[in-house]
Image (cartoon, rainbow, N blue to C red; front, side, top):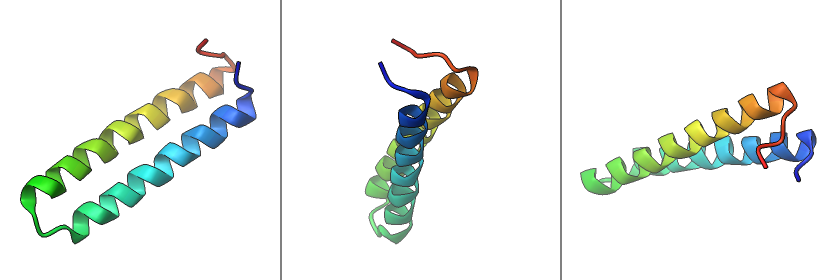
Length: 62
């Protein structure tokens, strides 16, 4: 079971990774690679938002 602080930390890590992937996508010269990185970044951002909402309610998803 994760504590609220652990959940916030994980949510922040996911957002940071999503930003890193978006920056890599911006540098990519390959359109397919850029799209793949952007898709992965979007999924991580969505997961971060879901975990943030769970944390805001003070509920553990387990």
